[in-house]
Image (cartoon, rainbow, N blue to C red; front, side, top):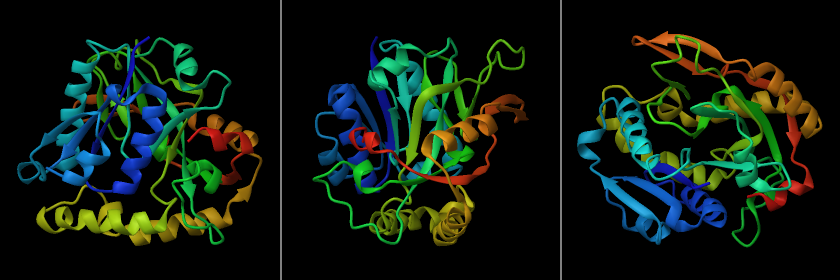
Length: 290
């Protein structure tokens, strides 16, 4: 089984370093594909040994999300001519499996669907957390999380013709019912955006040029990221603390049935975009995963 990982990145260097470090251990740098959104010497150095493609930034800002998802979907189809599975995620998202045979073993057990969703959670920096050190694994230093439908995304791709939309996906066969919503049993997606306050401030500053130069920013998260963070932390503080396994069980029950919507003439499968009312502390075994 041949597996590769694909991402698109603009600055956000700490998150990008985490992405490279994580996937290179599992797949090797030769199987990592990075699309740089504009020339960037620092990002090139971080991705040394990976397959790096640079796309122009100036002509790519209007309708940013739609253009990048379209481009990445087409490039993923190209990769699927050589690979059995493409793992696609943003540069601040890491996939890992909670099982003895790891991510590659979990991928072998996936259902026969063109795209698979993975249960996503926000990894949260809490008040008493120390600064992150590269000497230790990330999940040994950041243990608090909350499951979120927004990041329960289509992130494992096995067949061509899948278009990413609304954190879900669309194919020509969804309307017929031939392709359904599939949530992986033991694969999780950790969203790192709020796991490192220092890195978050740097990443937000790097997005300001896009916000200032386009008529419509990609989302409210971009235009007012601090408000987004405060709202999330408020809900996190109010959430009930549960054992990880129980929190995951509740999340799978709530997010395990996908939503099908019609958008721009296409049927789209995605997870219900709800934040779960339960927070958790990652078990000790997770410290070896990322």
